[in-house]
Every structure is written in structure tokens, then in C-alpha cells.
Image (cartoon, rainbow, N blue to C red; front, side):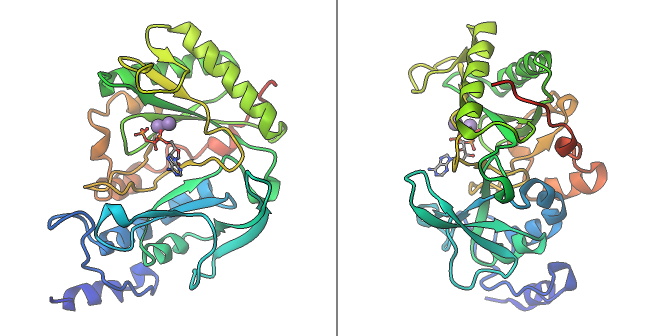
Length: 299
Ligand code: ATP
Ligand code: MN
Ligand code: MN
């Protein structure tokens, strides 16, 4: 196996001096993307990711081999962790004191790719204000028989309803079948009140388009409909982070888009590890204003 040219690339300053071992290891089969592809991707989007992840507790999805079956979620510190991954203690959902992690600089995404990290998932809050969440997520999960076009239309409907409530919604693809509608809120409510408010909003959204939405879990219920999953709005629940790749063939990315551009996406899987860095360098971050768009969520 020739690693000559690859080694020249990875010793390049663009990769911030981080040595990537097994750079040619392919993730999903013979023609799948390599570990180096993932490292290069995170090296180029790190600056865009950081504002959306900084100080947020993060769960890492690590793929240490070439098989998807070997991937696992990790939300606690590990040996050899990059220095800019910060550990902090808090209670988990069972009330036990545990150590969690946050990623504190843009280079750490690349450094974590060296540890086989493919996906980043974040809490809807910051470590410095853990119990006052600042993001509500409506995870739109299409059931069997729902086409992408219908997901887009439904998301645009949700946008209108949320704006009618005085909120400022943002949208991203998930790298999967649905979208995440993300609402920045001022850090005032606790988790319980925020979850209840998100549940009430989900019910109201469903009532505004009964043929489109359901708010009850289960594959049967969502057949031909879109499940409004509001259960991400809980302490220690995560959603895939903005600009995170997904561990699937062709590495799609969870991609923030402007509402206008959402309607021109034909196939969200095309937003991936090769296309996104180019897109970002020409058009910038469509979520740049998200932190200034927080509104009060009424309990
Ligand atoms: P899709 O558009 O295909 O639904 P998604 O990322 O929204 O993609 P979901 O299954 O709806 O996938 O999950 C929503 C979020 O919940 C994920 O982004 C992830 O952060 C979190 N999640 C889901 N399953 C797990 C799991 N087994 N362990 C940890 N977190 C999970
Ligand atoms: Mn989803
Ligand atoms: Mn879901």
C-alpha cells in the first residue's frame, strides 16, 4: 500500500500538523471514503462548526474500523483525547455524577477524526448554563411513503407557524431522511418547562395540518405522515450537530441551509463531505445569525 503522496498531504500545514494514522482506511467498502477524507473535511469546516458547537456537551460517534457495525457513541472522556476537548462533571439522566465533554477549538474536530470520530451530536444548551436550554428542535421524521419534496413543504409550513408565534426558526438537513427545524431561545426556562412548551407547540403544529403531521411515536402512526419528534428537547438528549458528517456511504452532512435554498435542494444526500466545503467557502454559513435570533419561549 503506497502512502507516499498521502503522507505528504497530511504533513501539510492545512491539516494543522495533526498526524492521521491509517489515512487510506476506507469506511464503507472498497470505494468508500477514507479516514483522510473525513479528516480533511473537518479541517476545512471546523471554523464553521465551532460557533454552533462551542461549549455544548457533545457525543461522538466513533468508527474505529471499516465496518459500520463497529461504530459506537461516546459521550465521556477517553485516553489520549485532544487537549482542546474539555471534560466537565454533571449529573446524567439517572442522577449520577458523570464526566461529559465539549469541543473548544476548530482544530479539535480534525484531531478527533484521527480518533475515528465521524459524527458529532450536541445538547440544546451550553456547559456554562446547563439547565437553561437555548435551542428547541423539531426533528421532522418522515414516515414510509413521504418524499423529500413533502418534507420540504412541511418544514416551510412549520416555519410559518413558528414565526407566527414570534420565534425565528432555522433549518438543516440531517444527512438522513428528514430535517431539523431549530429555534434559538433565550436561556430562561428550565428543561421541564421547555420540553412542555415544545410538546404544546408540536401539538399545535399537528393540529394546523392533520393530514401531514403526527406527534405520536411508532412507525405505524407515521405511515404517509411526518412525525414531529420533539423528544430531543430534554436534558442530555442530543441532535446531530450542524456540519457533522453522517456515518453512511458518501458521508452526507447535516447541512444548515437558508429557507430559500431549502426549496431548491433536490436530494439532501448530495450535501456531503466533498460538496459542502466548496459551498461554504463561496456562500458562507447560512446560520450566521442564529445566536442573535433568540426569542423568549412562553412556558
Ligand atoms: P433522520 O433525518 O434520518 O431522522 P436524524 O439525525 O434526525 O436523521 P433520528 O433517528 O430522528 O435521526 O434522531 C434524532 C437525533 O437523536 C439524532 O440526530 C441523534 O443525535 C439522536 N439519536 C438518535 N438515535 C440515537 C442513539 N441510538 N444514540 C444517541 N443518540 C441518538
Ligand atoms: Mn430525525
Ligand atoms: Mn427522531
